[in-house]
Length: 598
Ligand code: NAP
Image 1 (cartoon, rainbow, N blue to C red):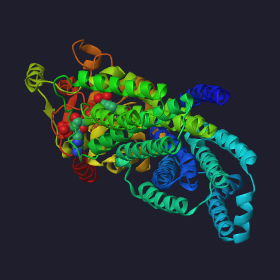
Image 2: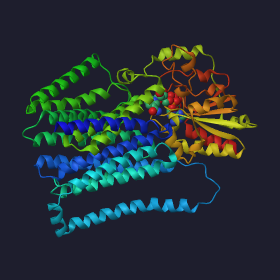
Image 3: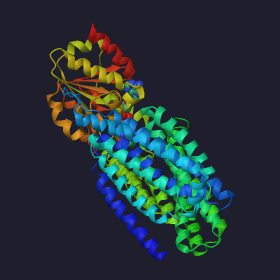
Image 4: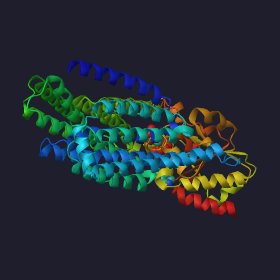
């Protein structure tokens, strides 16, 4: 056991380093697909869940295994489907060249993969239905072969993540990862511990139906809450498998108890924390931070009690009261961890919970001594941690500030006073804009969270097409934390058929603003606020921004002068070059089209 643990820890560590190396090469353009891809891969908890659901260890194990299979397969199916949906949207500007033979063949190969998958599943079903085959499968030992299946799956997952380093190879990479998942799952079905299949088939069917519905129909604007929900499902699967394993072993060694302890602790808090995050993002729960006196002290004390329970458990593994108390408190801790955080900070929280879900998955791998789960859990954990760090860095905030800062609260009078001292704001009507565009040669469009709220991405793309028809060069400026998810704007614009080679990252686009005749800001606020550069007292000070104020003229589409996520008044609106086109972004764009057409 100790050698196994040692090997497991080496694998965990090396997979983390490899994951860091591969994932840090994923461009911000693909950060949202990266989140859902790692989420789908973390559905590898399905492997452990299948073992628990399929081996007759008692009704509790089977029931928990069944729920875990349903949760994990929801993540696998839903995660891969939505990732593919997103990646299909990322297109380059169309090339006038006709499709080559090679491209046609590769398109056919891609189309053949789902068909092949389906075929394999049908064959498996046939094998399952044949009595002779079942008898043979029960007696044969596939464990040595299974190891190689897992090794190959791990390699395919890494290649899948590597593919995300460019939109060109991202889909191909994801096909490899999907194939890796299929191999791991199908291989596990032949594991000698699995002796019954009815609960597995039930769980897989439920998971496939729920996952497919989520993957196909959830709108792109709801991706953040879907991701949070998937983390909670993955964490629930880990927690249930942990409880089932604890319950079934009459005697547990210290190593196994520690692994189970970590699995249920991290799984439990991730489950409730992610559910809260999804509720806040879906506006089912109040989005504002809910704070009370002594909150941090209360959370820390709770954490201390949980840690004590874990220590008691490690010292005396059979103390089941400590185990169940720890599960209950971990669930409560996840809830308390997220309620004081505002909805706007949820993306960082989701990323952190992604990382925790990966750790819970890896712990499950240690419990079942399943190396593919250790590798995937480590990859998922690294990805979530890295994305959280990138987000915090782009916002110029620390993770501690996000988790305990209740950010975004500014006294209204303070904002008002600041606004009044800055001078006047000019507004503009839609029919005045065409005159400003006469003679313009270059326009930069700056999308932000308001574009997502107004679902104005198609309008933005249409506006760009109209401007291009007028002979204007159009570029899109994408801030790394515009919107509410890393890469949020990229996905929405891709959905509106904007070729990704027209999207410029902040460092690339900033030098172009001085040459631009006009910057059109659609629902972006904080990411354009010059206070981040000029005002040392501003909470935004130090955050890198899009240098919109350097354009010859600026038009801002938003409904009011209200601040954005950071709760800070925007100095840009008082710039004499800036004109406010007040109203919902989608409606304003519609009016603008009318004016441009006439
Ligand atoms: P923002 O600063 O939050 O501003 C969005 C603006 O959109 C608001 O000022 C709002 O003004 C406007 N708006 C809302 N609904 C609208 C509608 N229907 N039509 C037109 N305008 C509408 O957004 P941002 O500039 O994209 O900046 C993102 C912020 O989120 C940053 O502070 C960033 O640090 C934070 N954040 C981002 C991430 C991430 O990963 N992307 C993660 C965590 C935090 P009105 O109410 O006046 O319309």
